[in-house]
Image (cartoon, rainbow, N blue to C red; front, side, top):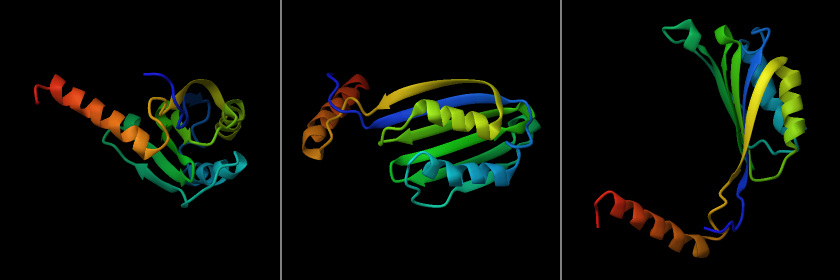
Length: 149
């Protein structure tokens, strides 16, 4: 299918920090989600929702949080014992990826990170009347592949 319109940018970053005290601190993760949208010119719709998860294995325990923005969402998952964090920034409004990475690096003192940037929604037109036939066609093809006619 030809590229019609991008719905948004989706930055996915995996990082490691030297000091896990920041990513293991509920207040620090909340502060990041509370302040980051405004710093990036995004519009916070709701306050951040942040919680601590205790797994039976300390390796799998950590903090997760999300903030809903008018442009979409920002989420984070931290695993302090591993010194690891994962951040998703999905926005229908373009944003400066390098600035976002610099702010993440600064906030969490990352020693190593990698990221991927995706253009989301490139296969669908922006209005319902144009996209509905494409969605129906795609779903009919999927049903056919599954043996349903």
